[in-house]
Image 1 (cartoon, rainbow, N blue to C red):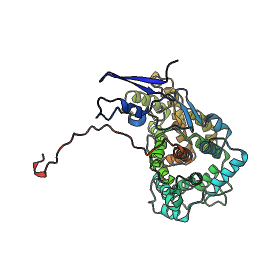
Image 2: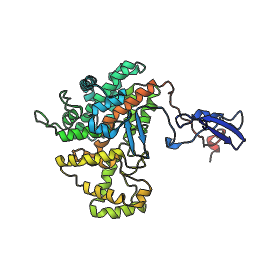
Image 3: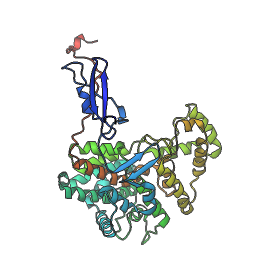
Image 4: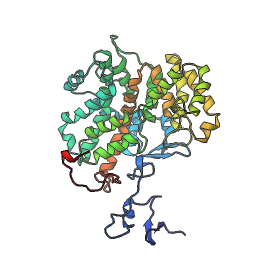
Amino acid sequence: MASSSLTVTDNRTGKQYEIAIKDGAIRALDLRQVRVSENDFGLLSYDPGFTNTASCRSAITFIDGEKGVLQYRGYPVEQLAEKTGFLETAYLIVHGELPTRAQLDHWADEITRHTMVHENVKKFMEGFRHDANPMGMLVSTVAALSTFYPDAKNVQDQALRQLHTVRAIGKVATLASFAYRHTLGYPYVYPDNDLSYTGNLLNMLFKMAEPRYKISPVIERALDVLFILHADHEQNASANTMRSVGSSLPDPYSALAGAIASLSGPLHGGANEAVIRMLQQIGSVDKVPDFIRRVKGGEAGRLMGFGHRVYRSYDPRARIIKQMADQVFAVTGTNPLLDVALELERIALQDDYFLSRRLYPNVDFYSGLIYQAMGFPVDMFPVLFAIPRTVGWMAQWIEMMQDSEQKLMRPRQIYIGPPRRDFVPMEKRG
């Protein structure tokens, strides 16, 4: 049987090195032994964007991009989306196992009781301009939570880590709804403890003057499923940010604000917004073939909502969302962009140009259509992404805090600037 090691020959010196392989990986520090001389720092691996570098060992989420597999703690996301609710899946992601009925009831009660925020948070929110971006408001108010809970800085206390995880999951929904209401100039709606997590969110977002907001069970369930699908996704940009910021041991709200900021970019949480803008740009079904032609010719930019950094086949989340879309549109009415999206998908999945590049619809392709049909403006799409992803971020943070191998994150660099040089006085420059 072959040894679990890698034999490296340095052609500069002719020396050979044995590097251990564990879990299909080598330790980057083992490359440091590959040197030309004693003064040589040692070999580095260069990996812009961490495309082939593992920064941690994690038991939370498994992805097989080649086969289109996504699992939380070993459970296929398809089964969880069909058979559980969001808070049940959230418990699984944070605690590692599916809850008993008593555990789930206690977990849901804890999160429900922590949806209320201090009145000063509301005053803080009121300081933003009326047209402030809701994602910017969410970043700021989540960061501000650290000032309301001074004990959050005691990150080595396991019980406090669990308490602030519950607080974060509960309060992020309230802060998101406050941000949305602020952009509309509407009064804030306080949490209703008699409602489910997503039902309460819908109530805080959309309740007007009626004594009790009537929640559509179809919309409530659809939002629950969307939240399950968005709860975690391995070491993506925002999860990496959560771990990177958290590695310096600040309070979790500061790290959470960094993760939300990372999510706000168009290449991450803003991707479904880009899909909507692309579909609006196309305009109608008859213009889809010309748009496809221009994409292939490099004239129309990227085909948004197709392809994924990880998945090299159909995104499993996209299948679930596409099936759910019909149920939502039966309640809200069909999104006028749906026909454009369906035609775009139909043509793209028959075209060798896209198939050869393994560009299949991802989760962002249909989620934006559903959010728009629910009545959300595109600026709210990343905020709706951040609410369930808070579960994954906090789970990643807890796991990192319990991992004895994790250290303050400090990547190396390859310096390409000028060599040492002496200062030149002003009169001798140029």
